[in-house]
Image 1 (cartoon, rainbow, N blue to C red):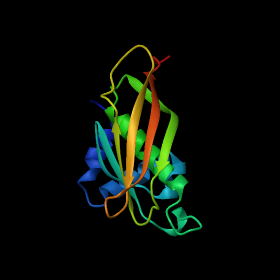
Image 2: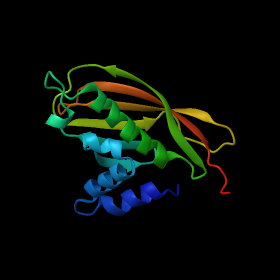
Image 3: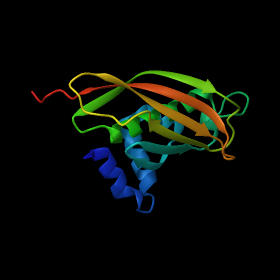
Image 4: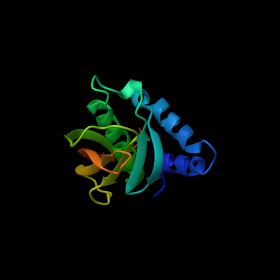
Length: 158
């Protein structure tokens, strides 16, 4: 699939500091995500992975990674995974997210996002669920999300 975001990732990923730079560029385009300092570690159609470090800026009052930081990480990598998986004629926007907090989140968090099915081209809108799991350094799942992405055809240039 021809995709500017995926092309940029593929261009930068193998270079020194390339994944860091790619992540910074995405946060420049969508500044709110910069608050969690995400790092994309893998991006391809059908799968995306990203991490956030456990640092003061994402910590809650009990010393664990804040629940909303986990939600932000899920939406960050879920959106990127959706973006690079869609046919070029389609676009997406998150419509809702259901989350489960399974255990205390301590350490660097690793998120994996996968669309529930291969996105397709159509003239009508449809919901594409994106599943996101976030694990701790021991590989235990601490958080799960299901993000409902609303996929529609791009408008014709006017």
